[in-house]
Image 1 (spheres, helix red, strand yellow):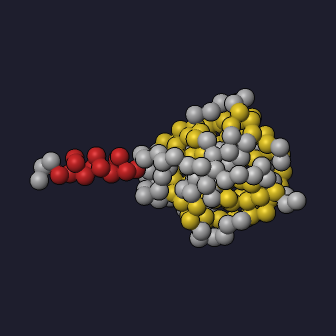
Image 2 (tube, rainbow, N blue to C red):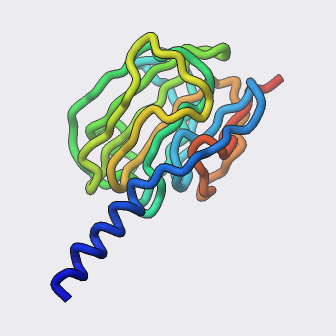
Length: 182
């Protein structure tokens, strides 16, 4: 019985930190989900800090049961990566997006700038972003991880046609969350 708890914890950690291979769908005009989880917010916003303009925000909540590896939503070049210390509110709360500790990655793409923000949650105390300014990313490639339950916000160009709705379950690198209107 004494060995059962460490064994169960080990199994949970192996399950939690899994990193399955994923294949991004074809097409230059699509954005894939950067995270596994549930879509909890879709809204038009004015993002002044990095994009300095209007965007469509899609927020994805990751429970402890989701894969927590984050993937590039499209092809592009990393313009900046900024870590901002903050609170550790529950990640599904609206105010967590800007008040919680986060790492914001701005990318230049052929459709303009986008922003992907890894947001720490109540349990998640650490986000890891493995890219730096100047790095070139391909759609669906791994770029970071958030440990335990957390949130990921993506800010797409206003010209994007959002393909998901509130409550949808998405998979990082596979689920199309938006496309560019032709």
